Amino acid sequence: MKILVALSFLLTVVSAEVFSRCQIVHAIKNSKLIDFTQYSVADWVCMASHESSYNTLAVNYQRGSDGKIWSADYGIFQINSKWWCVDTMFPFGANGCHVNCNSFLTNNADLQPSIDCAAIIVQQQGMEAWTSWVNNCKGKWIAYYSWCV
Image 1 (spheres, rainbow, N blue to C red):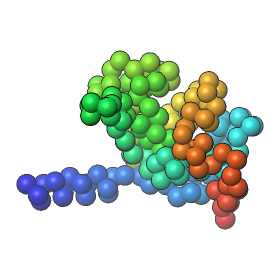
Image 2 (cartoon, rainbow, N blue to C red; image 1 turned 135 degrees about the vertical axis):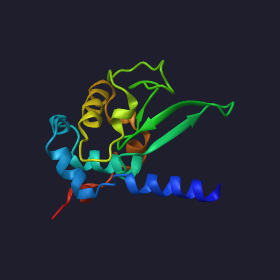
Image 3 (cartoon, one colour; image 1 turned 90 degrees about the vertical axis):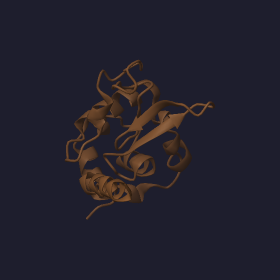
């Protein structure tokens, strides 16, 4: 049984797409996210760093006070299933981005579903929708997040 669990974990790690900071910088610079001029490329990259460590397959579950899972955050921007997407585990979310949560999980360079939904979130709530951005990026010197060679 231990071997099966270890093999399963290894396959997950091998298939995960963890981008470099510069790959994220380039993806954001070539996306609609730069249209939100009140936020810089560094804001987006800083947020992605603190949300997922640039891992496109990151999933984090939120539990209620009773210990039951009530939502999950998906992908590089950790987009929440309660408000922005739905899937078989969370079929009753508000689905503000009109998308399946699994579309945010990718092991290739296609970040478009995550970028499209992040644009909707920012349009409605600003980057304050991401607590990690508020705590780690907002009002701080973060220019180095957008520096690439």
